[in-house]
Image (cartoon, rainbow, N blue to C red):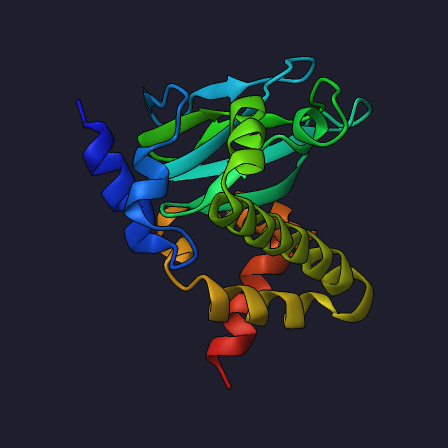
Length: 197
């Protein structure tokens, strides 16, 4: 089991905006969770007021439309060295409408979000980091929304592979196609067409 020192070192090595001591001094409990690939660890109607740091693995957040159980919609796929949390609970104070699934064996550091907010009020450096992290997550969300407005499927795919080349080998084509808002058949055609260029 990892020590608090190791957790603080891992996170501070990834994020320049926060240092080792600030993470080490976090007054709350940091849980270390391990899940097997395929585990759904948050489900619709759960209220999960936690922020997670992915030490290892891939996480997919998705929803299934009530009238189309055959095809779910992927909202995001996050990989190691990234934070995530359910925005319904963290921002809207509501139960989630999403499923959160491990696409690989995962290790998470789990933080209670209400304890983080209290800590941010006491330490300006932690507040700055929290604001920076929030802006990054918001930027990712807005960028994804804009992609669906301004980019066609091929452009979305090209942007995805430029930003996440490793994910093509690490996860199923059906999850990538769902993330891009296209069918697996369309994704296969795009891959072939781009290889021929």
